[in-house]
Length: 257
Image: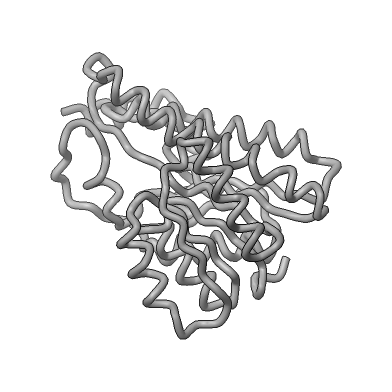
């Protein structure tokens, strides 16, 4: 798929990986729909990109709200007449012992990490099927293959998203719609500061949001199905597959507070 002039919806576009994706898509000449809850952040990002090719449409709202999602699709179609790519990037972290997670936190992280990408996918699929082209990209996490202490429910939601994505890919195997999973590892963004639950003041290391965005846009151009950002992420997945007992022992010793 050519990125130039394609219509791409990016959820969670106001910061971090989402904002980096918007910037890279704009530089490539895409027509980008910026979706997030923070209107002022979206407006500032759109203004930053005003001299780049393509167009921007800012839609502020909650992607766990099905009424807003219907509005998002309707306004995108009214403006551009098509939807080529949906990037389900919005998500929320959570850090606490499983025994301490409250019902409100469970509900919020489930709605944002699972229900939202399902709702948006259901909303755009009829458009893509009618135009006989499209790509759905779900941004998961490398920890979806490996539960970690204090992050059990967050990793569970990402594992569930992986299964949803693979299931959808099989359901659409005889159609021209591509379904992609992107697996970022540790990334230097404000994601960890915005997470729910207990604080974690450890020094943050990782790749840049721009590197993740570059890989995601490359996945559009090459219609890739699964995308890992670094070689370490690939080895982490293989290590979990072949030596899960070792990683249980390692992370239990290193990460349990």
